[in-house]
Image 1 (cartoon, one colour):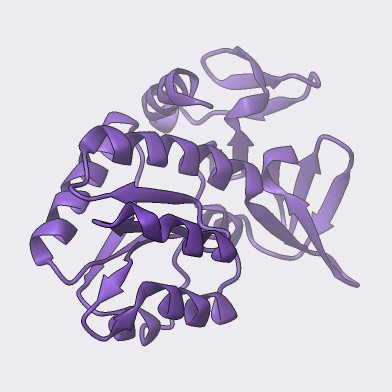
Image 2 (cartoon, rainbow, N blue to C red):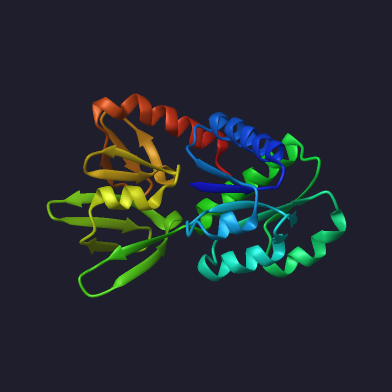
Length: 232
């Protein structure tokens, strides 16, 4: 996932980034973080961030205005405002703000906000399935596994199966969700639906089998244990 931190104080940016490093290391998750000191810098990136920490008052304008501009390009981005003045919290509600942190920012507050964000992020993620005639949008949380089958890809959800022309590697890059793991060159599995684990295969809650390559088995177990420990 991609995260932006915008604050006119570089020390605040670095502090939040350090908290995020600790958070993601503890949960065995990957993230990319960009730091900015002005709102215009964030707006000019044309990047699809998943989460933005936005200072309420910046040297080049009000954070509210910059978020409005960002949302015109990316309606799904999560916003966490920060300020030394708690009375600003009410104005931010109009932008569907996810969280509001009061300075000085404490690590516990960042961790609480990130726990909630990861839960919402995983639940609200969508997957676009490219079929022969149309593109179908499904909730990532409902996808049980994805299987490569020659020149096609099978996307199995809890409700039905779809035949897609998008490669499994492209699905892997687009999902970018720690709830999913590439167990084999032909399989991506949603760990939520694992019922039994054997050395070379996984039995899912619907009885279907997903293959696990010996070379990734240890890494899979580590990720699965982290998933069980920190799922929300």
